[in-house]
Length: 237
Length: 346
Image (tube, rainbow over all chains, first blue to last red):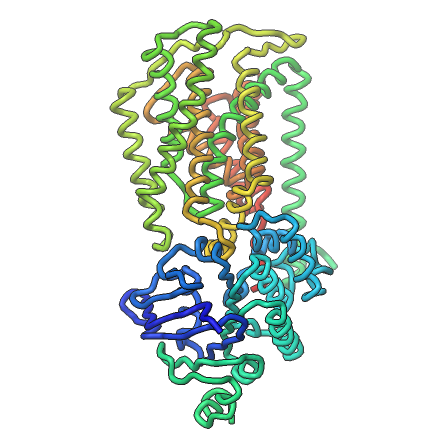
C-alpha cells in the first residue's frame, strides 16, 4: 500500500491561538481512515487546512508525493482532493443539478461527468427526485446527500468527509454510513471526520483519535473500538 | 366583526386594510396624473418618457457595477460613481484634446468606438486594481472596514478628477451626429438612439456572461458561499477580480456615453449620478442584476415624466420625487422590487 496523503506535524493557528498543535496522519490508497474526537479538538481545522482553506503555521502535507501545504484551495481540488465540508455548505439558491455541475467545475471530460452524475444519482436516488429543486429548500438529510454527491462529482482520488452524520435522523445516519462503504467500493479513498465515533470506527479501516489539537491514539479501527480509554471517552461505555 | 374593534388579529387586518386602501388611492392618483398629462399633450408625454428612459439606461450601466460588487462580496463600492466620473473626463480628453475631434464625421465615429473600447478596458483595469490593493486584504475584516475604505477611495478618485477636470464643469462638443428624426410628432435625437444601440448589447452581453458562461457560474457560486466555491476548485480571488472588471467596464462605457451625449464633465459627477445609480440598484433589490436595470429605468422614467410633463412638479423637485418614492417603496418592500428575502434552511 502506498501513502496517498501524508500529514506531518501540522500546526494551525487562528490568530495567536493554536488550534492544531502537531497532527501527523497517513491515508493509504483504498482505505477508509477516520479522525475522531470531541467538539473543538481540531478535526475540521485539520481538514480545512488539507483542503487549502486555511494556511498551516508549520508542518507538511503531501498528496500523491507532492507537497501541497499552503497552496490555494482551487489548486488542491484540481489534484483530486475533494471535500464535503462541515455544515454541508451547498449552494442554497442553486438546484441540485447546478450544485452537481459546480462539483465538476474543473473537469472537461463531458462523458466522464455524465457517467459520474448517473453514478451519484444512483447512490442517492433521493437527489434524482429533487433534481430541479433549490438546495436551500431541501431537508438537512437531503442537503447532506447533495454535499457528498457534489464532492464526488469532482472525481476525487481522496474524498474528505467532514461530519456527514451531523444533525441527521438515526435512519439517515445509517444510510450515510452504508453509502460511505459503497463509495469506497467504487475505488475512492476516504478520510472521514466524525463525532459519532462508534459508527465511524465501524466503517473505517484505521482511526486516529484527536484531542485538543494533538493525536492521542491511532491504530486499526477494530482495535480502537475495543480500547478501554476510547470506549470510555467516545463510545459512552 | 368590525374592522375597528380591538385584538391583535383585528389590528393586523385594519393595518393591512389601510395599507391597501392607501396604495390603491396612490395608484389611482398616479394614473390620473399620467392620464391628464397624456390627454393634454400625448407627444410631450412620449417625449418626456423617452428622455427619462434614455437617462435610465445610463443609470443602469452604472447601477450594475454597484449591484455586481454587492452581490459578490456584500460591499457597497462608493468609489464606483467616481470611476464613472473619471471615465467621462478621460473620454473628453481622449477625443477632444488628444485626438482633436470636436465635430461629427465618420472618422470621429471610429474614434468614438476606439474610445469606447479603451475606456472600458481602462476602467475595468482601474476597478480591478482598486479591489486588489484596497479591498482584498479586508475581505475577512468587519464589514465597516472595507466600507470606509471605499469612501476613502471615492475621495481619492474625486480629487484626481478635480485636478484633471478643474473645479467647475467643462463643456465639450460631441462627435456623435447631432440632430433629430421624427416619429409622428416625437423628436428623437440621434444621440438617444445611439445610447440605446450601444447600451442594449452591453446589457445583453452582461446577462449572458453571468447566466451562461463558466466564469458566470463561478461568480454565482462565489456570491453564495466563498469557501464552498473554493472547494469546487473555483479561484475565488480571480472571480472577484473578474466581477470588478465587468462593473468597471460598464462604468467606463457609461462615462463615455454621458460625456458625449450631455457634452459635460465635472469632478462631482460621480456623486450626483453615482447616488442615483446606487439608489436604482437598491430600488431594484441590491445584488439582483435585472433589478438594477429595472430600478434604473424606473428612476429615469420618473425623473423624465416629473421634469417634462406639462402638469407636474418640475425639475427642481426631481430628486425629492425620486427619493420620496424610494422611501415609500423601502417601507413596504425593504428588499427592493426584485430582491428576495433570504429564507434558507440551515
